Image (tube, rainbow, N blue to C red; front, top):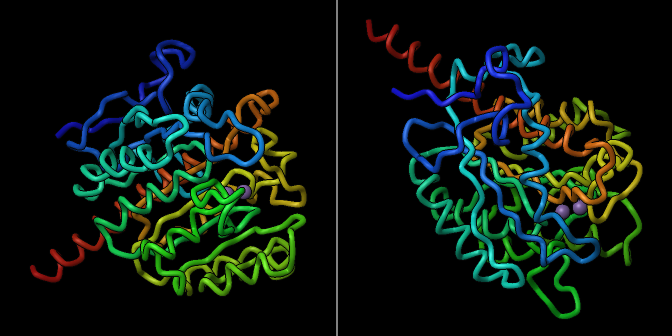
Length: 327
Ligand code: MN
Ligand code: MN
C-alpha cells in the first residue's frame, strides 16, 4: 500500500523543489490517502479587502518547514496516515454559484471514500460550498466555527452569497445542525446587539471572545465537546479568530483575540471529536508581514492533520481491542 508522506528534509533540503503543502506529493488521487490538502482560491465574495485567492500558495510556501513528529500531541503523524497535496479546485472568479458547483463536484469523490479534506480558502464564502458537499455524504453535520465574526448576516447590498453570510445560508439549506454547532471568538464593533442574537436565534451556541477569556480554555473546550458529542463535525477556522498581532494578513481584522499559542491549542483541544473535514479561510497574503500569518496558518493546518492522525490511531486501537476480545 502506498503511504504518501512528506519529502525527507534531512535528505532533500527544504528549500529545494516546487512548493506543496508540507512537501507532500502533489497528486490528485483518492487512493491510499487518509487526508488531502486542497486549495479553493476564491475571493470575490469578500466585503472589504480582497486577495485571499493567493492564500493557498502563500501558506504552502511557508509550510515546507513542518516536520512529521508533533511533540505536543506525541504522535508521528505519518505513522498513522497518508496524505497528498490535491492542488487547487478551479474557481470561477466573480461567479460564486458556478464556484460552489465546482467545489461540490471536486469534494464529492474525496468524501465518498471517507477521506478528510483540509480545505484552504479563499474567503469565508467557500464554506457554504464545502458544507453542501459534506451534507451529501454525512447529512446535516455539526459545525465548530472559530471566527471573530458570526458570518450569519442575511445579505450585503442585497447579495445573499458573501463571506459574511455562509452559515445563515447553511442553516437555511439544512446543511448543518445548529443545535449541535458552536461559534467561538466573536468580537469587535457591530451594527447592533441583534447581530449576536441573530446567530443564537438560528440555533447556534455563541461564545464571544470576552466570555472565552472569562471562562478559560478548559471550559470552552468542554462546551464544544458537550455541544458536538460524537456527531460528524466540520471545523471552520477563519484566521481572523486570531489577534491581528499574530495574524495580520487578513481582510477584516479584529483586535483583542487569541495569541498564536492559544490559536493552536484550540485546535489541539478538539481531539476526540469525530471530525470529517476542515477549512481554513481568510488569509490575505498582500497584508501579511514577514509571513507571520503564513507561519500560523500552516501550523494550524498541521494541527488539523495531527487530529486526523490521532483519529486514525484511535480507530486502529479500537479495532485491535475488538480482535483481542474475539480471541
Ligand atoms: Mn469568517
Ligand atoms: Mn471573520
